[in-house]
Length: 131
Image 1 (cartoon, rainbow, N blue to C red):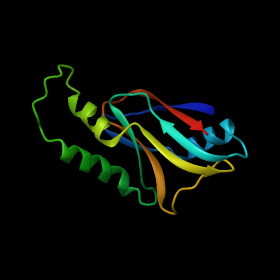
Image 2: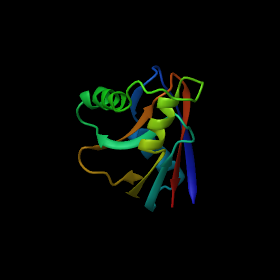
Image 3: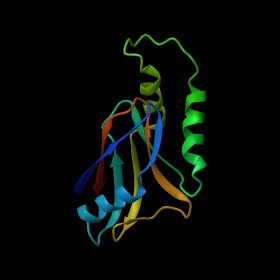
Image 4: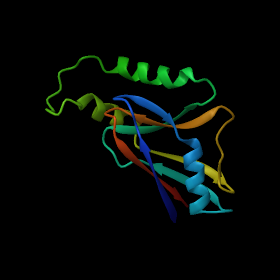
């Protein structure tokens, strides 16, 4: 299995960053001309990855607004003040699997890969595995 890694610097506490192009660049360098299943993974407990529409720029803010609304002011015991971020990361998930061919993800017409920051701003890492 081949892999590549790229970094993301987020600029807000909660942010949705479209990373489809970066994933495809990493995939092309890790497995040029290959086909198979790509695993995209972020090794963080307060961030997540998802697939959603990438055509309308309002999706970015709608995703964050919806996630914010899913976790109202709940009393968490975790003392760092970022328990909602841990919960959302666990709920959404930190990995995706997508088929690929010749370095291109076989996503649907309107699909893109989003990195979701729930406890920023931070410098984050995304790993792309081709197998």
